[in-house]
Length: 259
Ligand SMILES: [Zn+2]
Image (tube, rainbow, N blue to C red; front, side):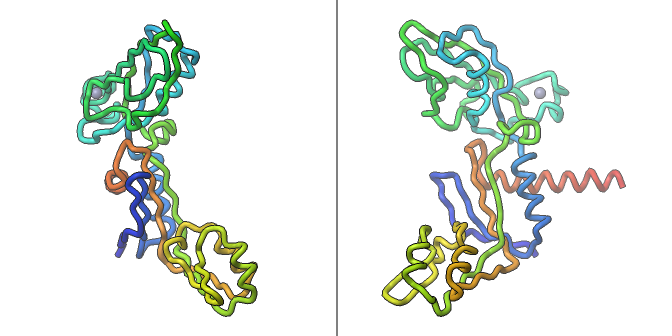
């Protein structure tokens, strides 16, 4: 039976680290790929530029706006190909956002006005361009639902996994050398005693290295996976996970129909 167990939650960074127990590499990797490539979000796809006096030319401005994450309400928006309008564009698959600024200084994401108050740019302070006196930008964006397979701008976040390490400290040959090499606080040093700091263990990338420099350190792996999930802000990490599961179920059902 598959079990998920929380290790660490960093709300400010939109980051969740948890154990994936009772599964195998293939399944865990499927979930990872579904999250990055298939879970849909909103992103700017079309821009109608009425005025752009800023230092960035239109294409650059478009690229920047496309990469600004938009808070996505999955209940209200559909992928175009799955929408009732059959791809023509309607309020259930398109979101209009206006940006009209005519004052000197940085133009920030918070100055954009979305026609849906629930779905706005996630990072208010994100700079879009810069204006000098008497310059202005005036544009209308159309955001649509899409997924990371179409373009990375629709990816809801970043995720990776690794096997759970078990680091053991036996008789350390050279404490000073280990102390010097340990730059990620994986070990706690107190006099002649060396202990593993569990809080840092799962985020360390130096574990193999420690076993190489001192034979007193041994490393093993369990059958559990540590899954790191970081959201860009369009969706919560809970939504990212539950959506990936739903997509997997619908893919399995499609396959069943074909058989
Ligand atoms: Zn539609």
